[in-house]
Length: 138
Figure (cartoon, rainbow, N blue to C red):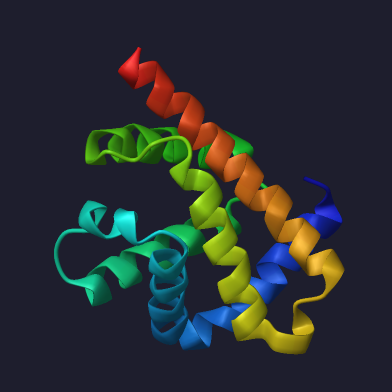
């Protein structure tokens, strides 16, 4: 990711943080609309799950400038997700739901440049998690 992309992701996520609870609920609505078969992967209270989601995205976004810190965190997360039954193909669905949620939450601030920056950030996160999950499953 370029420094400009990191700046765009961090700046736009700062706009989402005040509405984190609503953004999380919207994300899961978008995710389950895209693929209802993913619902059984989520056990427990969805509000708590949403809080965890937003917290993890916040950590990842804040550490984009520190890959030496971020990548091991994402690798461990990917390993855990493999244990939960997450498959490689699920990451594309999650990415689509994330981008849709951001476009809905940020409205006009979700420019093409911001979308490209988030696509790059999510691509980095997803590929790191998938690679770690596949090592566990190998």
